[in-house]
Length: 250
Image (cartoon, rainbow, N blue to C red; front, side):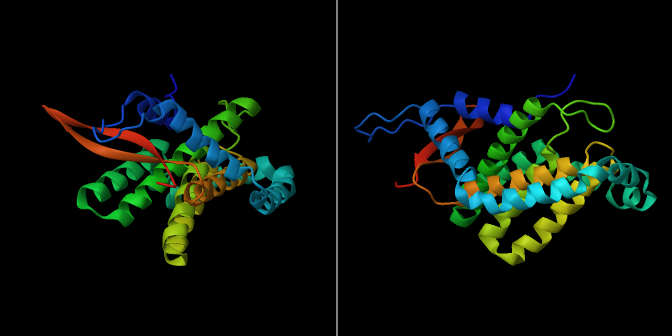
């Protein structure tokens, strides 16, 4: 049985965990579901804006160019001993959605615990980018329902590629090209590993990269609307993470 996608679990956690109550709040606050929908809506509006057209046009042009060679490229990559030796193992593991989302959450919580606002902001943006990329990828996968090269379902677009390119875009936004070069290099290698594993066609990878870049941009654009945030909470006998969504105007 296939595991439920990371985006599903992130949404469930965010909707299930309540915000910490604040006694000093005089006015009632909007509910968490409404705030969550406003946040995601703002991100998707940013992804669908006119600023995304150049990237979407370029991705579509490249995909149309390589589409006739889809099966040939995937077959060649899957049969390559060099690629198998180079990419097998670590590249496949590093692209897992649960690892990307967990790393983003750990970065945020560590930043909050250490009082490092820059680290916390990075973790929050990474978490939001992975969530938006995951939701978009799953929606398109079920809408297109393209068969994978190995015969399994839902090939288009590549979720591994979308997640890694989303993280790389957030790194570029926060650290410039010093963060972009290693992050995008890792994203390219992980995307290549999907071809080598015979799990995706080249057009799946191209579309996944476009989705990831757009999601990373959406998560780091300071637009009016709500933002995702999380806080570690100490409870009797253990702990938890409480998610909340605040306005960017606050």
